[in-house]
Amino acid sequence: MTDEPDRRNLRILLLCHSFNSLSQRLHAELRALGHTLSVELDISDAVTGEAVALWQPDLLIAPFLKRRIPDAVWRAVPCFIVHPGPPGDRGPAALDWAVLEGAARWGVTVLQADGEFDAGPVLAASFFEPRAVSKGALYRAEVTEAAVEATLLAVARFAGGEAPPAGLSGEDRWRGAMPQSARRIDWAHDGTATVLAKIRSADGQPGVADELFGQPCHLFDAHPAGAAALHGLPGAPGDVVARRDDALLRRTVDGGVWIGHVRSAHACGDQPPFKLPAALAFAAQAAALPERALPLLQGSGEPPADDDEEWAELRYVETGEPGARVGALSFDFYNGAMSTAQCERLRDALRRVKQRDTQVLLLLGGEGFFSNGIHLNCIEAAAHRDGDSAADESWRNINAMNDVALEIITCTDRLTVSVLRGNAGAGGAFLALAADEVWAHRGVMLNPHYKNMGNLHGSEYWSYLLPRRLGADAARALMQRRQPVSAREALRIGLIDQCAGCGTRDFTAAALRQAGERAASYNLRERLMRKQQARAADEAVRPLADYRKEELSRMHRNFYGFDASYHVARYHFVHKLAHAWTPRHLAVHREAAGR
Image (cartoon, rainbow, N blue to C red; front, side, top):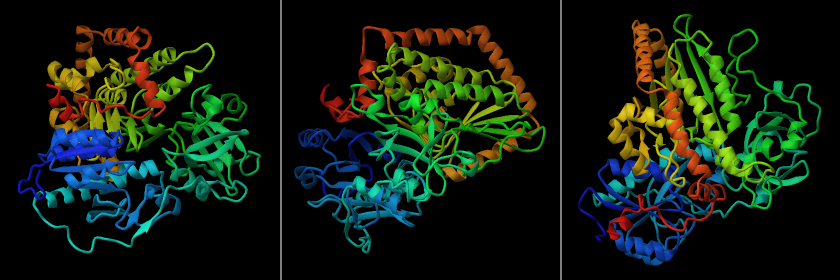
């Protein structure tokens, strides 16, 4: 090891609590620059020390940690900490405080580990103006972009032997973990903006401790309710007055909020509570509430106005002149997970929009995630319902996902485009491939594989869709590799068709403009004719039903067979159990040592 390498390409160890979206993005960006990387999950001090001894890194980078780096490690090798706060900010809940307090300016700091928590020398920083969104949404967008910028700058300076510029340190401020008392909602006095800030600051973990229907629970996934949703509904602040899809509408002193997810022991039997859609966790109480559905299409046949004040999982808008119309369908499912019921609603929405007179159909997914496939938490909940099982719900869910994919594949009378505004994983990545084209922006990460979930075989017609893009050998290699793929790398290998060099918001507008150009293009009719001929030829060689049958026969063994690996992995994922080891496909240093 050397303190100041004089070469550009470094041997880097990523140390992280879990290989989350930011860790994956940095892994991809650093590898693209020519650095050699391995990953170790932060399991124990001894394991971290062993990883350093095996890998002999020039540099250790910690993009997501919940514990201090051991003294023996940071004294032996330079360790860069990626902190989601501006210089001078210290503590484990930086982003929680920023969201709760509505910070007008925020940043990400890369600092070098020393004996104090978040107090080492500042190596680089990047700043942004936060949106009024959840902690998770901010983390996946602005924080990740700032973290990539600051980390790559710090690594470049380190590789070149440069000292960080002076003046990066800010006013030192330590703030500990945010207590529930700081987030406690006073329904009799808190307005909608305050309620949203409190729930959004706790998004992901730990949630806001509260009650629903007299049962203690934690609240997540909150959205403002428009006046139309509340119109004519009696109730006092704090009352739950309606439902929409799987969300519950709760009054505030000046309006209302939709609460999409909760964590409650009420719905989890004898298991530790885990996160569920609110109307599923309180199914009996939700069934007695009036439904405030937001129509996908209004009675006149025209799509509804794109009212950002009113939340809905499914939204559809149209733009353009007759004969050159673009339809855009978004499906913004929490964390990208798609339950059986959500898949069925999306399938029905697709059938409706396919009846519209449009020339291009954009599939927008959600802003944070395009899709992550089947809903493992809803599947776990089925294991605790009388007369049901996790295997049965898994079977229902994968069949419903397949129905959605089939609607897209067989939509041959218009151009279909999957627009990846956020990450896509497992079945969600292959759902995107069901469209004619796949567009993404530079920040998107894809995980086009299933095996990390207990060697799950996967479906969604991937055995048809993936070889069609990559060829049989490359498709097989990608599925076995289990590595995340950046949008830039996905474009290089042919997995996607376009990678825009911008962020989510600019990307969505650009995609709509480009779709309008496609809809008005002189050769669209010819292209659609070729598409129809290709689909007919493929069907003659091997019907889609045959691909589905073969995939599902393998999935049936995953769900109902003697090997319980999928169910064990699903249980660990849902209950957020600590990792016992780092998977070998990430821990290159351990793979090499085992040879």
